Image 1 (cartoon, helix red, strand yellow):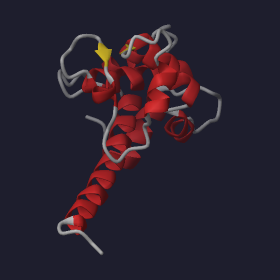
Image 2 (image 1 turned 30 degrees about the vertical axis):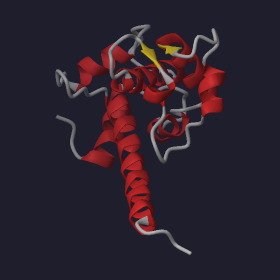
Image 3 (image 1 turned 135 degrees about the horizontal axis):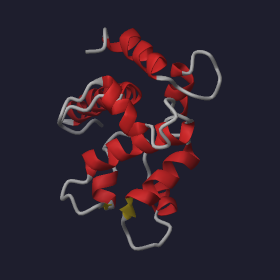
Length: 158
């Protein structure tokens, strides 16, 4: 027997899952093109922020760290520099409490940015998008490659 309103809940979950998928792709593209909506720096400025070793290209670690930092900042609702399970989880997404607990290395019930970055690198959170952007397969993403990925999914870079 179907409970009243269960079809509405299922429809909401489907819409949430599709929305989260689109949001994830959007964030991934924005990370590689390094555009931020708060200040709207040029793609070159944002890329420079992600390029922590200043070699004019992003390695997997730099791209992953920038991606994780963007997600972390967006989810840290109270801006305390830590993510609780409630801030970490996104309904309908594949994150699990076990994954959260695995990332929480100091077992204090929250994630620091560093714990989140380490977990992001280990889990390969940004690996597929990085591979897609790295068109010459040299293990790095240049500003041009990032712009090309952005243009192929979002239109010309501003």
